[in-house]
Length: 322
Image 1 (cartoon, rainbow, N blue to C red):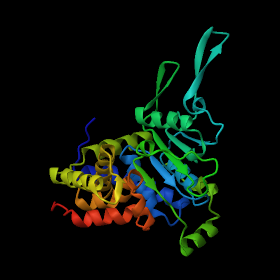
Image 2 (cartoon, one colour):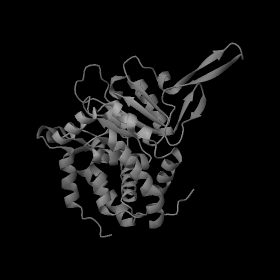
Image 3 (cartoon, rainbow, N blue to C red):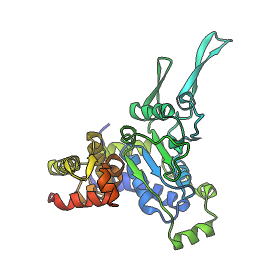
Image 4 (cartoon, one colour):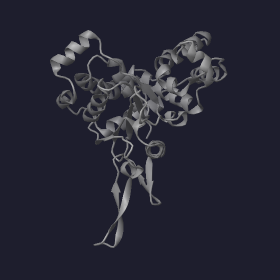
């Protein structure tokens, strides 16, 4: 289905839905408007989100809030070392009454799946989930079971404490369209959280304001957002610069450049435009690229961050005039 990408369509069909979703989620997640918006951008871009942060800053609340606001079937799994791939993808069991094998769904078969502390389970279980994210289906005993549409994974990992963790390798981190960090709230936001009593209970006040069809409509609309060839060249030039930069060991992959273009289109859509401008690319660059880039050991030792290097690259690459 091709969406008629006129400004009138965006104003009448896209922005009202996205605005309602953002307003509802902000009731539960206070003081993190930028993270909320970028999570919605990732959903509209058809990608999955990795929340890399310490415990207790609202990662689970964010996922629950989005699931309720968008009326999506939601499941949560706490990943531990004893979680098996079959717990995620499902398994077949013999039914004596029918004399046949029946498929029992795993936790990942829902519209929005929260994989809590994904770095605390085995690499085999991580791979099972990441394969489902990539393929849009799970295969059990040779039978393929499609995942619902839309399908969104919000995975969390705790960067503090390495005991008992199995960090995601770079090739699997690349499957997440963005990596976001919520961080501590400021004083005013924390006071508001205390007044509202915060936590999961805050999500109870959220009303369903969108449907799965609305999400699919926004995803199709984002695909139809126009990007000039100069925008694509700008994205490709940034990617090429990361691959040849002396401070970078591993640059942005081709999957990363596709993710960057998709996120830029989603950003343009949420700003009410049917075309991409360079500022859209810059707005999402850090969130798309940071987890895909590895710095050299010497650069890490100098306390230089990926964000610092990306800023320097953007200063050296002139943005096209659109």
